[in-house]
Each structure stands twice: as structure tokens, then as C-alpha cells.
Image (tube, rainbow, N blue to C red; front, side, top):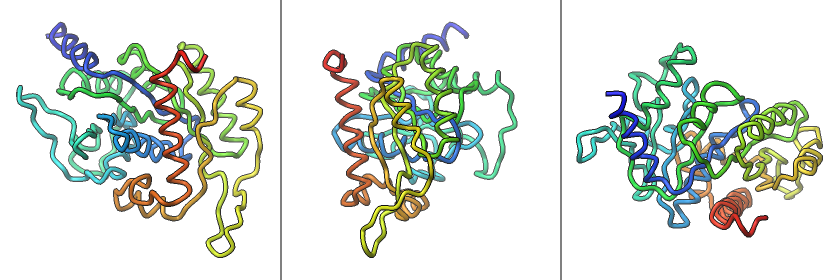
Length: 273
């Protein structure tokens, strides 16, 4: 049985061309928002995309993608499969496997690691151009298990906000990636400023300017500076990804620029050296 499960994992991984993990040093910085909009942006560029929600204790991808309450489908071979959110976008989250959205999973590390393996051993994934994984905050069991399970990854996108406390935690994520030889695709600085709807003046919300030094010291790319837009909350609550439903907004355009940068860095690595 163990050999069969390992074979299924390898079969699923063989269907995935590019693998990206989205990380953050701390919670509340918009990591799942960036994951969702990166995946939808890739799909809007004609890519076939999967989202894996590996945030076992705080899964939010089903809410952000509007698939709450949708049943897990069954593939032609009789195995469960990710939920098809768009014709070219598939989502798998633990939130789709538990009885209630209010249920808490009180699990230790080994159980979480086993679940992450089951996402590939017990499900039938389609052929994908990209798999985007939403990791929980920090550098604990889940990110390590994902990296070990996926094997070769194209890299990680790290999300932060401008304040120095968030930057301090990002340094740990950078160290984590460097120790595991995980390429860092770039940094997304979320909630950089708020744009006044009356006068269009941009006001910085959080104090701190450590991101510039961090990027310089580690020779990283800044993929996007995202403004704080109240429509982000509306889009999330309604399960309507911001990059598509608010595509005329400056932040949505910045997100699409981020998507294009990620595609270029992942698909043309030789040109980045």
C-alpha cells in the first residue's frame, strides 16, 4: 500500500510543470490574498493552475476563490480530485474535507505532515502548468513538508507588510529558504499605502523602511508594492478574486505586473542570471 501511495504521489508530481510556494514570516500580511490572485492571474494568462491550501489550521482559500460548500469531485479513475473553480484553475484545501468551517483541527506535526502527503497520494490531480501552494505563516512543519513532498520547486514568493516587526519575521523566511536551497522568486510588499478616494493622495499606513535594506542585502527582487484598498475586503468576502473583478484598480494592475514577473522568472531562468 505504501508503494502504491508513493507511486500516486510521483504520478501527480509528474503532471506539474512549475511549483511555487507562497510564504510569510507572520500572519495577517495578506499571504492567502497574494496566493489567490497570483493563481488567478496565471490562469488569466492562459496557464492551467492548481492551488493547494496547506494552511491546515487557518485555511481561507475556499472562501477567497468562492468554492465554499462545493463537494469534492470524483475523477474518472474513482479517486477524489481538486475542485474546479475555473475551466483552467483547480483548488484543494482541507476546508473542503471537514464538516464545518468552524471546526478546529487540533493536530500535531506528524498528522499535518501525513495530510500534506495525502493531498498528492489520495487525490487525482490534472495536468498543470503551475501549482501555487499557500503555506501557513512561519517556518514550521507544513512548509517543510510541502518542500520535501514537492521535491524540486521553482521557488517561493514571500509576502510582507512594511513594518519592522514583519520584516524581522521575513528574515527568518529568507533564512529558511536559503538553508533548503529554495530559490526566492521575490518579495511582495502588501498594504504599502492607502490612496485617498477624494484627493488620490497616497499615505503610508505602517512605519518602517526595512524592506529596501532587506532586498539589497539579500539581492532579492521586489515583485509588487500593493496599496490598501477597501475593495480587497469586499472581494475576499464575496469570493471574487480582486485581480479579475477589480482589474481596473491600480492594485490589481500591480498584481498582474507581479504575475508577469513571476512567469518571466520561472519560465526564463537563464535570462535572470
